[in-house]
Image (tube, rainbow, N blue to C red; front, top):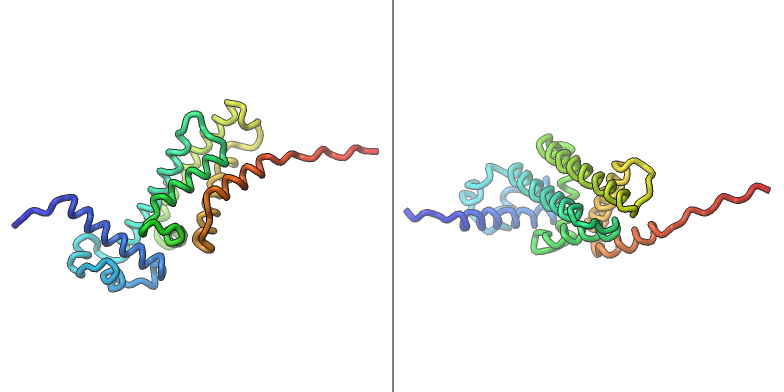
Length: 209
């Protein structure tokens, strides 16, 4: 019997995950059946069950990939030396996330998949733990980045670095939610918006007569 190469096994697994991702993005996790996944991936039940015991395992695999894409994009952007300003940094993160968007590079479908994964963590302890681990790592990386901004004079002393880091992460999360709900959300929009907000100046207090 001919031995199946690892490349073939990886490609078949990718075929299953891409087909499932299209179904999930279109109909949601819970409205998608294994039969839907079989039809979309154009594989037999035996071929699919060789890789995954059921839909829950496929959901977990897709969620793990989505976490990995986002986490890697944050880590790569935060490791840039010297660090770019937050507007440029967040633009790079979001662009990197969407550049890797399955299925077939559909940004809105991928954003919907990410939002569904976030929702799924509310009922799946394993996914919740994976999300918490990634979020904790991102907070730590971006908290260190805020320290770099202050050390180089780009950001004055002020609120706790963790508060700034969480706000940056929340901005990225909100943008992904916009992409999922409305589509056509260009990362350049985030860069422009943050740049405008950062240029604001506090108005002087009125003089007491």
